[in-house]
Image (tube, rainbow, N blue to C red; front, side):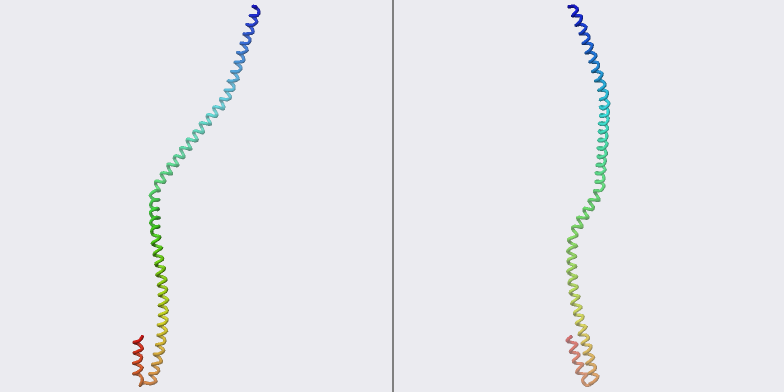
Length: 164
């Protein structure tokens, strides 16, 4: 039995040594894998840090652009208010101008009608003047032909002038 105990004890140490060796091999493999993964983890962390920096820069740029935009809006606000006031004033003026235009158009039509009437009256007066001139010429020629009837024609022409 003591032989057996020695055999088991040698086997026990061999198995223990084998387990130790396997454990060392596994640790070595694990360390190698960790080293290769660590490179990728470091690269990933660096990329993640770059993404954070890029986002922060973009956010800062956008905040600056927004601030500039608000400043420009504040600077331009008096001009916008002035233009709005002018637009409002012009909108109120438009109906008045439209009414004035309609009134002027109506007056123009009336004046044109009066002008036509005046032209007709002038034409009629010119026609009567020509008739009177012709009648006057006829009367003068009759007077020249008979001097004794001068007094009668003179009286008749006075009546004609009064009736005009």
